Image (cartoon, rainbow, N blue to C red; front, top):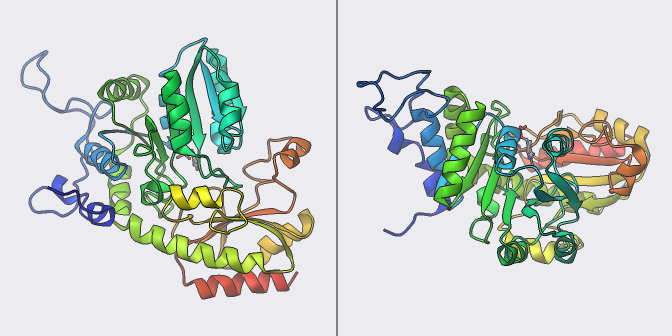
Length: 382
Ligand SMILES: *Cc1c(COP(=O)(O)O)cnc(C)c1O
């Protein structure tokens, strides 16, 4: 049978796991399961190993990513840590330089302690990635679009490099979601998600997921999750399943609103520079158009001003909530210099392109005219 379109599969993702005619997956709030014969295991044993609600979610996410197998973790970082458990002391990992702050902290404070070497490379430049490869390189770890500058890496080109050298290509697809790009189709080996963002979508869940096509990788990751106790709670899985049904619809609105706002900001005299892959002056706009089927819901920009101006602007925005995280139906605002990137020394931060006046907006699904009005009045009042 022909595979249905993603929006259809998302809406119908729960009901095949429903019981007694329910269109939603039941919450199996359960730790242990009764067995019949000592040593002969029934399908379910213990929720750290498997759970029917979690199984529904892992099938749903694997299906959306056009993968074969999913493993659900307690958080996005637990998922990343789980993937890094595939490697051992002496192995080398190449990572995108401007990855999510929490991933950076995990790499620098924990993964490196396991004697796994990490090189931070601008993965938008395939030549730099090639140059960084060593005989012990086991993994290329890429975030695209990156956060907060929304740089785009060429997944197909990187997968060719990785394949030639027998290296695993891992893509953190949190920002784009399977609605906008399918890394496994472009040759990646592993897709990672923080389901805390767009996939659940309502700022009510912390969760993570890993999707692969390869059975051996799946078995390893499943075992890692069980052995390290990084399993999700059943209720969180249920909430995430609920979020998935509207994911394509939400993403469509996020993208539409974000493009309008990026275009508005670009023309405003108080804005110095806008970072949005959907704008024709974005350095990887052509690649983004080819690789993605939409440009996402995040818009970053430099105000023409200093830290004080940035803080005053943020303070004047009314509809946007000041938070870490992104990907919610509600519009969110963030100030990377004092929030996600506060641990970077100022000089290093500026060098990486995160200025004192950099603002990151996660555009929600509100009416875009109201959002524009809010942004306009905040810009004009300062
Ligand atoms: C949030 C995020 C993570 C970490 O996920 P948590 O669910 O917060 O642990 C990893 N990668 C990216 C791109 C993220 O945005």
